[in-house]
Image 1 (cartoon, rainbow, N blue to C red):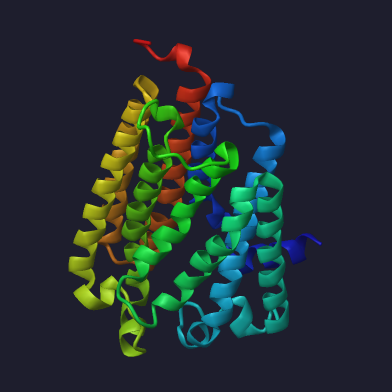
Image 2: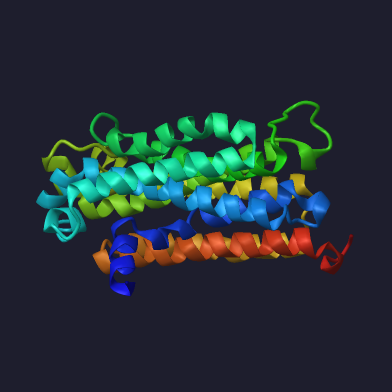
Length: 304
């Protein structure tokens, strides 16, 4: 059973859930901070189910539609579908069951989440097709993951109110800022990830900003995207009224971003993997920790 679960978890890269999940949980506690930052265990559990099933559906869809390219690419030829470790019918079944899981969890949350769940499925799956026709595939991936904080906010609030602007803690501008930060974060590290497939994508007619601009120029764009992401996180914290803990955490995140780009410029597959997964996972976890600290323990922040 453990071997079987491990195989399916590897098929959909379950460990990569750590990218979007902390931002969803951060949006959840900010939306619920009138209740000491916790929306209730049932809502929390349903948000987790929605996050995992949405991402599983998207990754299964990605593996299904990209199986021909995966088989041709030396870097990805060992994946489950090209190797026959998982059948196409099983992958399609998993994709369908995960989609149903998201819709079911959304139904249990509130009507707005339920009505928007098909839109979320369309967005998260559509990304996998974009490399066939646009160089800005990284933007589509960013938008797909940016649905996480917006969805968590809707799960708690049940509405999306922009006006009036004040009070900020009830305004949907907060999850929109967080979603924009996720978009630029994803643009930056997905460009770094795409460096591995530069030659393959160029020779097989697949699109990315690395193919369009070349690795050097694409890395400059990735760096600028990450600096803009850091600025958006700063704006998010200021509007939330966060202080010492949050600002200290941002000062931790900044050198991690700089280290990521220093490693990416080495162009080694080993170091790109570190820059892509480990450092970005650390960034998302640090962000969640400092947000939880500000929301759940505000009395420990000096100056309040």
